[in-house]
Length: 117
Image (tube, rainbow, N blue to C red):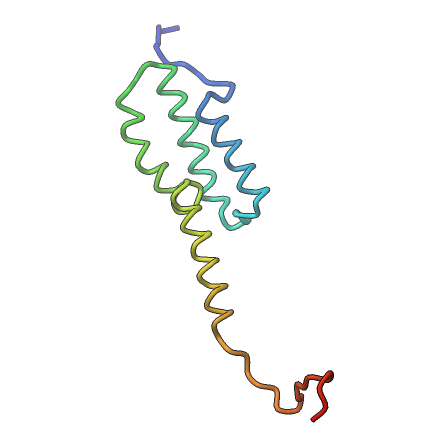
């Protein structure tokens, strides 16, 4: 059998473990849905590849992976900045809803029953 410097990973490394924790936290917060699974798979595979490159002491590989993995995390709002933006979006929507007067129900009259008319 020829000698090789390839390291076969059978256990998740630190990147894969961190991604698994982050995904689980996002699921608990209901920030992810089934439609996100394809992007999550790409993030998981990117983390696995980072772990593989790290175990082989190959720094060039991660430099090519970090941008796309970070972009996928941003798309799923799994970074601190994008989570904050999502919370701001929800708050702005709530304030818009509160500022929009409801259509008046002409059939229902509102009166102060403690004061006679």
